[in-house]
Length: 140
Image (cartoon, rainbow, N blue to C red; front, side, top):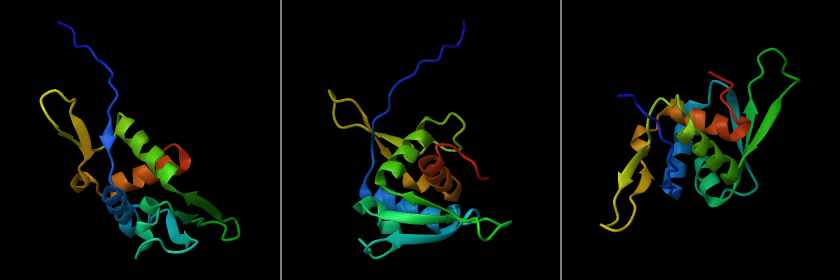
């Protein structure tokens, strides 16, 4: 018998805490090899820069340019870009980890999926941010 592949749509609940946790992983190690500065745009909406995105704020990320200091690139990360990056990661066939878990809500309801941020390491957080900013993985 031949194996068959079916494609389904996955609905995942993403909490503000999930976003904050992923941003901490990104800012404290995930993106540091290509980004040397993360600046809060406007007022701090939480205690830390990692709290900005979940609260509707923005971060300005500076890409390290080792060959020409005068040719700096900055990218703005906001909630829409973050969620687009997370969605792209979840659909990426070569993702290193499955970061979702089923959470049944009752006999007649479809299972809902949640993020399991215990499975989000620096590599995964980096990939989510890169997908959100660039639409693809270009570093690492």
